[in-house]
Image (tube, rainbow, N blue to C red; front, side, top):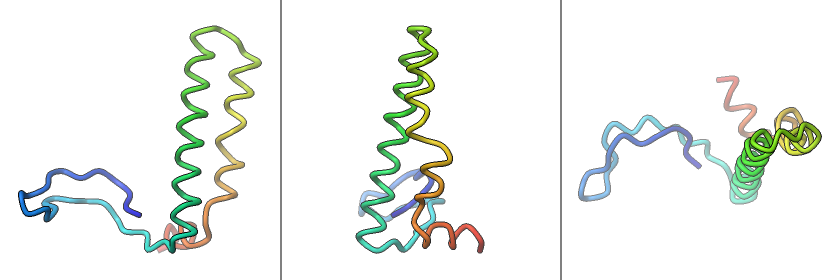
Length: 84
């Protein structure tokens, strides 16, 4: 799993200027991490949609699927990586 943004890729597929950091997640951690990322995006999309509708209750409901709950579910290997 890589985090960050790639600047460019050479024709041979070798990254140039790539500032991403490899998290060394095992397959289960990677699947969980990607699932959390998708959930966060869905939550943000819901928040934005409900802001447009001016529906405060549904904004709150959409926001519950991200934030502290997701932070607590972050794989230990990612939390440990952040300490380095």
